[in-house]
Amino acid sequence: MLDADFFRRWMTATAASVDREAERLTALDSPIGDADHGSNLQRGFRAVAAALEKEAPDTPGAVLTLAGRQLISTVGGASGPLYGTLLRRTGKALGDAAEVSEEEFAGALRAGVDAVMALGGAAPGDKTMIDALVPAVDALGDGFAAAGSAAEEGALATTPLQARKGRASYLGERSIGHQDPGATSSALLIAGLREASGASGE
Image (cartoon, rainbow, N blue to C red; front, side, top):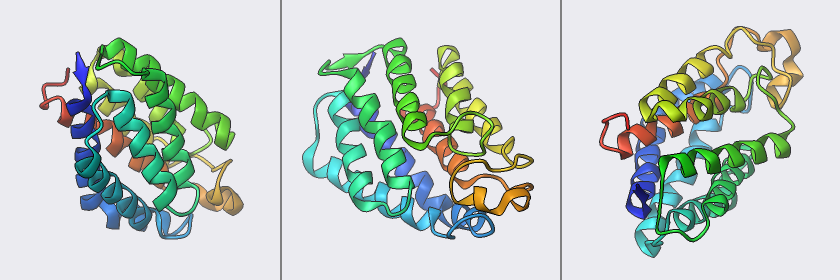
């Protein structure tokens, strides 16, 4: 079972990996976006880590709802609303339970991903964060390690795609050949699940 501590560790692990990878995320964003994806997410997840330390919510749903609120209020551009919606909707789906099963979490995360698709209008293949998140949710039944691998593969697979949503879509064919920064940061988020579980993959 997954408790509030697990979800706090997930957010903290994600904040640390975004910190480490911020320059790479911004470099990926430079040719097809505003060259601010890494710095924006770094600011947002630092705020999440600080808020969780200060408030210490005691249910999984409350952890994710607080994290989503922080991202919406501190991250500029489209990333804040999209990541914030992902975590808030997932948290809402988890309800007030003190502990949730991996199956319940997988269902809640799917609801979060669906909410992101509804908000941004993106589908798999559009060269967005959805290209990492949908495969990850599909693979969650096989454990956190499988979900992390699926998200990473999904992010890499955005490179040959032409962007159909977001800032990169304005470039048309010039967006081809660049890995999507949103899918890349989403893969970091999913990778954090394995880290939070003690790297066992379950």
